[in-house]
Image (tube, rainbow, N blue to C red; front, side, top):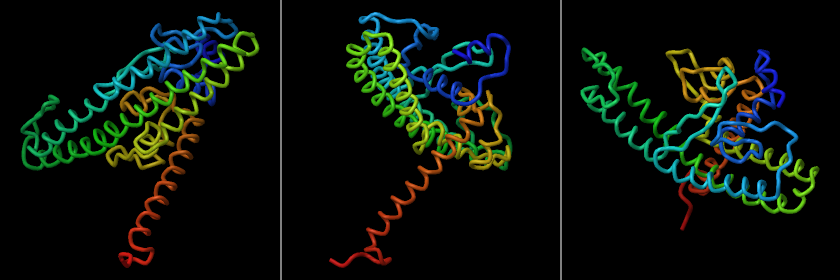
Length: 286
């Protein structure tokens, strides 16, 4: 693809849609030219046999179902490109893993650093212990509950949606996919659909994009929306940015989507609150 050629030639990183699409197809099994277990992406233009096409669809569906169960426990693998354009893998935390992390961080906070299962240096003095407890409490709530538990639930839903998409692709692959033009069209439609599913999952509350847009760190001067807008394309210091190319295109797309989801969510809660009080600020009459 164009991005691979420019990167191989030492040109600046791709911007916009091509980099975003590539990142999204690397994140989960499903892309027709993406062989994640082998860490490679096929060149465009190659045709595949009937068995190759259906075998890839079924294998991707099985892999996504497998990732659902892995994310339920200690996390599935995701793939991404490093700064040298090489495909790398990293492991998500998973739902159970996030629950364990929450218990550790909460225990560290409540004991004011006397119990430190993560191996941090012991805080000295009452003031340092209070700061340590505050930091660990923030990690427990925002890192483990919102980002870890909530993020894992979103990822599990995405895994099932992608598995369904992979199975749905077997029908056109077994029919119109027998023609070169048909195979190309099916691949384009379903790869784009996978990117769309990933985007919708990312902008949901606790999704990866939602976390980036709402990231807050007073110590780093990072405010919601503005912090992500000013972030570099590559940031190895935080796992929320480590596995994506945070281009201006991605920032714009994710910010708009996450804020629209916020508005929609607030509207739903507003209606629920209004309904629970009869719409007049007091309980409805029996």
